[in-house]
Length: 501
Image (cartoon, rainbow, N blue to C red; front, top):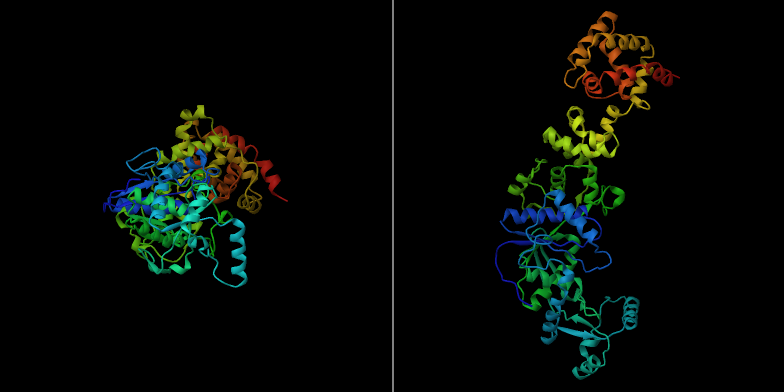
């Protein structure tokens, strides 16, 4: 196989296995690779490690592509893009590795092992009982060359093992500093299985070399593979890339992050309607910091400030409250028409609006979103926030119940208000943005009645929306419109009767 040119231009790769979704830890690895490549004017490669044929379905591969696209992490080479270092699917690269296996066998750096599963199990049991290190005992390394030839000719099954040399390997890790591993800790690893396919650690070395990868940035769960991979690079005479192992994302309170702590798949965040810029900021801050003060980073700031040197060694805490805080921050930054476009599919899915009525409803929806946009963390919340605009409230929330119970004598006031507003406020004032007339009328009425505005507005809000907290009541009424408000106010008696013991 051809060897890759050695150039010092930065080339990094994100190399996920398609397991059905893009894991949040994988997304962060992709982001750190992307930022490093962009910062150094380098190339960001997407390579799919799809050697597990069962799990690597087209849908699973699509989930990774979609997840990266949602986050805005465009790769320079890889699936859908091509590039001069392809193919970018490991399954299509498998035939290339056999040449490297043959090279190591020829040079005496690897050997064929004919040991059966039974013998290896027996060996493991013996070593366990004797409290020895569990590793292969090199029986087949001592075989006579003639015997090896005879067994290969007889088609006896064999694996190929790499012969680990004596000594130690020091990983010069950009994040962890120098990590020393004694070779006696590493057994003679299998590099080619009996069926002729190569194992992960060997394939990765072939791929990283042929794709001229200069820096391998990945999760610290891969750290145990690194000494083996470095030994293979050296045995094959390839330059060794630089390594940077980023800390794992830990569950709140420590331990491994799993589904019970919240979503681990990027698709779930996308479906909930978190803005990509909030996700990027959230992922970047898990394990990396610029100084002790700054929490908010746009992509442009990350591209300017990110460095691997500032990635911490300790595990990074997953904290959904931080994401929600960032979600709310970025919602406030987005122009209204963006948010309306994002909200519409959620409103259609909830059955609030029919797709064919959208153009007629667009302005009304925009005025609703404008009222609520500073109170939402992700778009899925818009459905609940706006529900009362589309559906008559079925029941009162806790706060609204308290209001009606506290102001249990307000029903006659509400009924007098309903009769008055129907007469006094013209249809033209019941329009989004025209709420001044509604407010002026209500203030005039309460001063005539000798009560506070709150004595009227609180029960009104409860009856019209079923809630105790909403944006400005008169703004809400102007959007609801005259017919809906009068219809809901006509049920005031029922609402009071149901709420009072």
